[in-house]
Length: 204
Length: 389
Image (cartoon, rainbow over all chains, first blue to last red):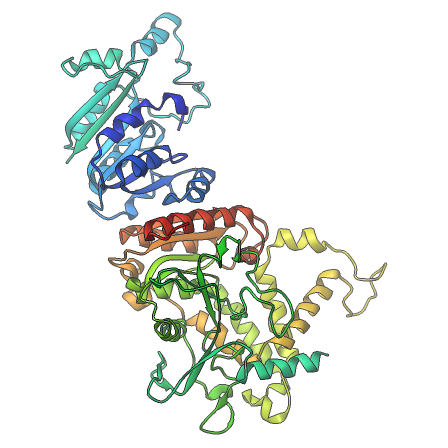
């Protein structure tokens, strides 16, 4: 939603978590980049939900199965465990009720994949610590007053929310500022400091 | 001239210029009204060639006052087919690739059995002796036509408005016969407001003394005034307030000042009168009663215990719904409720709402975004169906 194409390295990571021919719902499918990637490389049965009507129309014109909808209000119409994977990439922080949305993802999908920008990243901390300002940079390009990202969280915050919702973290990946995966053996605090984006594979 | 065209309409009802499929006593049409219609006939047009696998057939369902002449010059009006902007050689629905079928609905007046057809029991036009026809009845008859062509599974069923209702009915009644479905500017039921407008139209027809209780042919008359008024009222619902005002405003018709009388002072009045007058030349009044009734009776959820999702349970059909922002006859919410039901049924569904001020009739017009959506949907469905491009 707020991150441009070149920076969507998280999409590759998400795609890597999905086996071929899965049933996938991409919530916040944007311009359909992930759905297209999954259809081409994994032959998935992919569906999308996107808030912006323009994004939807473009997706449908490109042959993707996408509807206009709001993650905050329209997930309730999907049946339990209707998909193998429900993906929410770079959208959680823009929802009004992230807890409810995550709960719905875990209900609709056998597994949920969530990627989000980590507000615990050292550059964010540095901006707050040194300048005393909310961070504005290439990855987080909005000012505090016009950002669609109303619910930022850190990796640790997210892990806590998963625990609260009874979700198991099956796999987690943190990407540093260059889009490189951070070593698996590192502890949470390390990820929370050096991970600019995080991708979680969840199950409940 | 008008009388000549009117006679031609009558001829089209019984002796259509389209191919006709006749079903005898051995193949009656089972009607929701609880009776059988027999014998009956379906007039249809086809375009393109059915491939050897019979997998490239597209069924187009027409709207309230439409007909089977979707992509050829209309034999009554002499005008281009009603969806020629979309369907034809090299068009978005390319008849060089697809075998396109469009049939006049049962209850219509261009060759399929309807109230203007001769009732074999009396030798006179059916009039109101024809049982009320439902959307499901129309679809049942279409299925018999599709069976006649030996088509196991239609590649796509599409249509707008009342045509869209038929698409939804097809997908619900015969999911295994429909690979993809494209209902446009429609809903799973007719709203109270829509029924209200239809009732105004019907009352206008029935209030015309020339209607004669539906037996006007026997009196050598046609309730043209009543039908024209019905069309005028309905036509308003097909347009948006913004588009009407942009086109006509308060402009005067061929005059510089108000006349302080009841002539068509305003352009909009003159326009509507023209719409009404040309309509009666091409359409049968009783058929108008039957068509409007079929839409009023349509309620797909009610047929499934009030749960619309159950109308599509287990469906494997690929859906694409389209609505228009300024359509107040079938507002976006009607499409969205179908989308939600399809989501609940786990169906593959796309949904596009198109920004336009052209109202309900936008589906018949040259709308680039509509065409882009249809193109994308058809192309991806064709890939999934293994149809070569």
